[in-house]
Every structure is written in C-alpha cells, then in structure tokens.
Image (cartoon, rainbow, N blue to C red; front, side):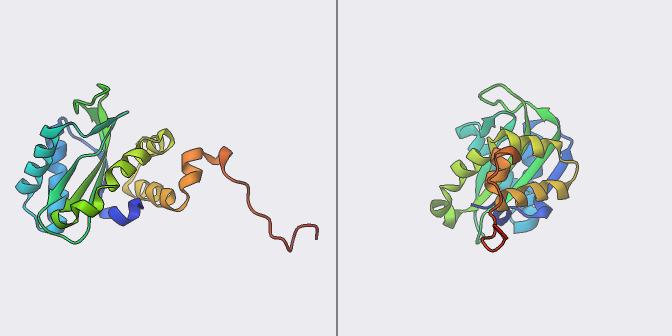
Length: 174
C-alpha cells in the first residue's frame, strides 16, 4: 500500500482550526464530496455511523475515520493536521491532532479490507507522526508521504539505522 496512491495533494489540509469531532467529520465529508459528487450530508452520515460502531482513534493522537461510498472506482483518502488537538473519545484518552480518513466505494470494500490495518500500522510510527506534526505546509505533508512510499525503511528506522550505500564493484579497490 502506498499513501500516494490513496491520497492526493488536494486532499491534505495543514493547520486546520476545529473545536470538535463533529466539525472534523464535516470537513472530511466536504472534501470527499467535492471530489466524488457524493452528497456531503451522506458522507457525513456514513462517517458518523461508523463512529457509532466504535471509535476510529488509534491512540497517540491519531485517528483513522473511514466510511463507504455508494459509487466510485478507487478508495479516496484525506489527511488533516489539526492546529489544536480535539477530544475524539480515543481509547488512550489522548486528544487527536492527526486524521487520515479513508473512503472506500461499496463495490471495493472486500478488496480494500487489508488497507485499514496496514495504514494504522504505518501511522503508529512515532518518527512519521513527529514529522507530520512538525510539517508547516500541505506540500511538506505530501513530501513526507511520498518519501515514506519511496523509502519506507529509512523513515521508519531513522537515518542512523539506514542500510549503508552499496558500493559499485567497479570502484572497489580502484
């Protein structure tokens, strides 16, 4: 799974000012509605229905709200970095400031089932979330996700644990 296959720069918001979980879900719905043509209210209702089943907060200030869409041909993601954390009723009681929302077309739900645990696992990485929280622009957040897709291990392990560069056999001993 690559974040850049699910997310687009247009679906990233940095420094979002909100005061409630309800408002965050409304913003997510507005963004997806503008891209898909699905009614904003319908998107919002689907997100709220999913939250009633169980809170989508992962802990550590991160949430992974998700919902089904009636139509579409691929999953769509939206990422929000909040200016101030909000109460999200997280299991660890920590307020949420990073949200990666996933909207999956109804006809693809079975195929996309493995996406949620994989996204959750990647978002639980402290190095990644530290970078996302420190990002000062939409472009910077996009670059973080793009680099993660290209250099998954370097970001997860940090540069001190990165594999050394491979030497070209032609230059060794020359």
